[in-house]
Amino acid sequence: MAQTEEFGEELADFVRRVAELKAARSVPHDDLPTVLDTAIFELDHVADQLWPWYERLTATGSAGTSSADRQEQQLLKGIFQRLPLPVALIDRETVVRRLNFAATNFTGVRAGYATGRPLSGFLAHPDRAAFRSQTAAVARGDGDRSLTVHLQQRPAVPVRATLTALRPSGEPRTVVLVVLQSAGARAPSAEGGPGPVPDLGETTRHAALMDLLGAMTTALLSGPATTRAAVLERAARVLHGRFADWVVADEGAARLCRTTVLGPADHQDQRDQQDVRVGDLEAQDPAACPLVVEAARGGSTALQVRPEDPDAFGRDASDAPVLVRANVTSLLCVPLTLDGAVQGVLTLFRTGPRLAFSMAEAQAMDMMSRHIALAMAKLD
Image (tube, rainbow, N blue to C red; front, top):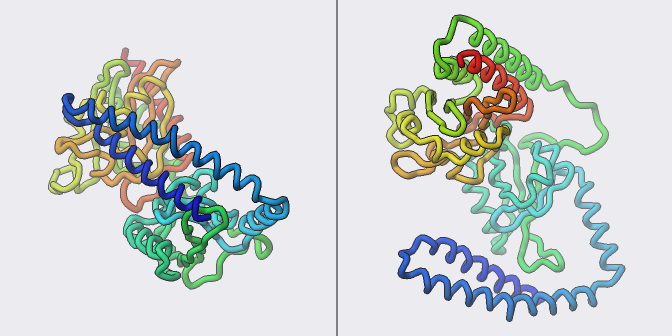
């Protein structure tokens, strides 16, 4: 076990050094040989030290693991998955290692999607720092903790998170077991009990989508549009506010041209100097937005919740990532395609505590995009 811990620490140090080398790619050209020499040294270290060390540990672990031990591990994994309480296993940086069935139902996040991502990313923004801090304290051995948090998809419902430290066999470091329960209410049972109550909220959202589809059709058919940019602006105004906080329209495919930018009301007059402004996005070159360029080339819709790449929509006038400055929590980037040809791209942002775009909303937007492309093509 001591050798495993030592190997884990050595590997973690190596990963940190690699991250520093990646950051050093921007050094002046004259200093690059030094960076290259360092990278070669690190590669030699992996080949000569870490890999043989890993092979020794693997051989020792395989020889020392009996059939009974493997059966016990499988039993414990089965118990973890079938626990009626929502339970997650995370590391000291809140990255999810495991999520049981009850937790996937409770959070609305699939286990395969959650694994490898920070659990704090599924919480409301004000709760994330506190949750990370308490998790780190539990992992350090400062004792069990409990705090109230809110899921980003249901910010109005308080959730009690109880954290305790574990040291599973074969793990180089302490992990944290998190139990989630509705604050002031009993945790939902995985089986038994009354059937699910009809989700009136889902019905309301479906009706709102139907209204949006009707409003888009009316806007595209009412009154003649003289230019393709006018069609884009008319569609953007239907989507703005009721469907997305930000709507950015770019015309073309090979040569993109930004035609419309609509943001939240407090950004329209550009009073807030701390956040991204409408003028910044209007002045942006669409070719500097990887998300838009990829949609124009590939012709496929991109739906992202809690976007991982802060530079996916480029940077503003202050050289800060637009997605970070605008506090974007989910986005849709939709190509306007007709018969395989891209006519333009619509990008929609939702910010702050607003519910993320759903698959149903993405499908509805895909349908509207074809109608918009058809209206644009009629002006050719």
